[in-house]
Amino acid sequence: MRITLVTLIILLISSCSIPFLKEDIKKISYSEYKNLLETNNDDKFKFNGKLSFFINKKGQTGKIFWEHKNDKDIIHILNPFNTKVAEIILLNSEKKISINFAKDNKQNSDQIISKIFGDEKNIFILKQFITRPPSIINNKNKILINYQSWNIYYHGKKVFGNKLLPNIIEFEKNNVYLKIFISEWTS
Image (tube, rainbow, N blue to C red; front, side, top):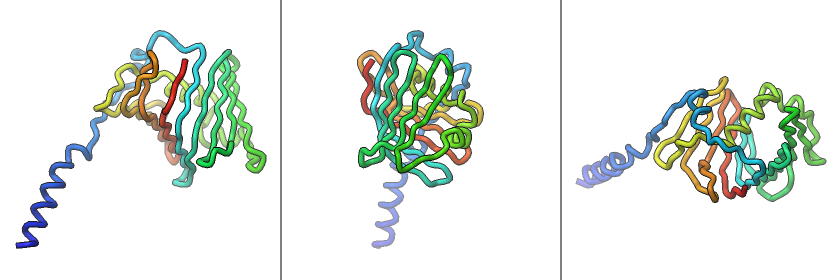
């Protein structure tokens, strides 16, 4: 009797949770994504969030502070203890990038960029995916965009002032995984 009762309870619980296990994914192409972009592009913005970054299942979590103004992006990456890990500078008009690591973590930024992103120009495309999400984001679906071997996922939505943004943006490619949680945005 107990076994039957326990089995029925497990079946009831599992059957109630099945619809929530499979998240609806809406797939759109890169050309559809470009058509779904807002027409205005922010001249300046700041955003704060959390991130997790993994290569070959080894990685770190931390915080991200991103500021864009005067055609330049400055991105601060901090570990969970608020110690700066790196500062990334994007010069948009010149399509140049530089990474300055913390003193105790000197590495060759060119090698890291090529290992993770392949080419510097890909970083600017990924920046576009972060700062200009498609206008169809909502709370019910996960949106997937495939772009040159990258899978870009958008989860949920938040509104900051007049800016509609996802709760979470994920980037996956081969053994590289980047997840950004947007906490605050100001224009």
